[in-house]
Length: 112
Length: 113
Image (cartoon, rainbow over all chains, first blue to last red; front, top):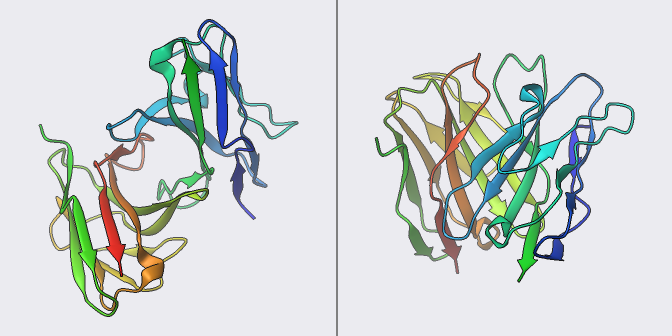
């Protein structure tokens, strides 16, 4: 079964501390993985995708196929990073429907 | 560009009532999606469309119907609302098969009493 698991509902850190939001997936093929973010009173938006291997707002995420993980990391958290973060998976071979399977979401709270 | 818009923003229904949620996008996107967001469950796909006149079931389609008569609009209908359909509904669109990013609307908060 295709599944995305984010084990932490809430992650609370102090400003300047490192952040790691965990994401594990279950999928037999080669998925495409994303992180979406929802800031307070804003709509859900794409943060980054694994195929781009990019860093956005200081965040990076590496796909580890052996551990089936796609953890989101940032070395120094900022207060403006406080938001809800969703890990999502798009299965290859699904007729390019672009369907996304979302994890449960993790609320990141960065304290001053 | 307004992007993806949703109407209404809030709605309260009584059990058994019906309603239609409207999603509109002005980006000429081919693909459109309806999700529901529930605490502790993330977003779950209800129905989706890969082009005008086409629709398909997602993960949780029961109790919902959709239509895509025009490319820019994707309607989600509840024929007989139930309390279990209390949720926040998000619409999203995607440019096409070769593009990965989905663009989301602001959401509709629906309460069924």
